[in-house]
Length: 257
Image (cartoon, rainbow, N blue to C red):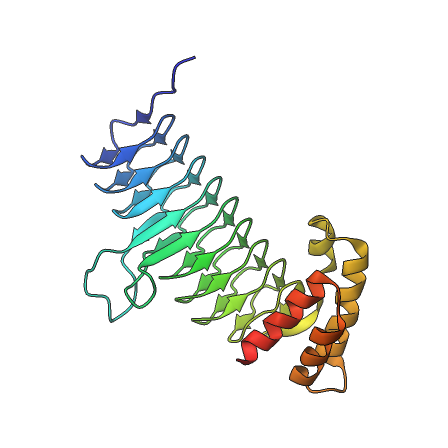
């Protein structure tokens, strides 16, 4: 079989110098700038803007009014070259935005594979978003935020610049995050605090049951015990043999540094 031919609606604008791989579909009223790269089988439904410096891997789907590669909302930005690099199989729903990086970072905003970015979600400059992340409606990531693989953020969550949201964590809707969220936990509130272990997310991710139980014990000792947090973390770092607990403890120690 031959390669699938890309299709561009006659009412779309694709500038000379944009790169479209096989099977790309560009719907009506989309705008793709010169220097953008669309990987195999990407689909721009309609009214989508993809700016220069954006590189999309295969099988990404962009819904109306999504904008990828807009200039960073940072006063230090002076028009230098910057980019957005997106992996494979992501869904960007209506009105999502992903801004390009700045020279204060490494000039790249990165998104991994298999993410779901729901209506109105915003990924700011220099963010690093891992695989299989879910940003629910109107989640807002400040600049330089790191969201690790499998994290889920509920609707209207806001994350302050330079924070890290840990792997397989769940943050409840409406939370305001101004410090790191450790991996494997649930967090909620203004300001968001650890509320427990994300048992549902861990089991969906097939984390072994002994590790789930070990995380439950460790979370209680760290965040609800009598010892100061860093004292408990350093003690658990020496005592634990479970890799998930070790990762949780390391995140707590790193946040303190």
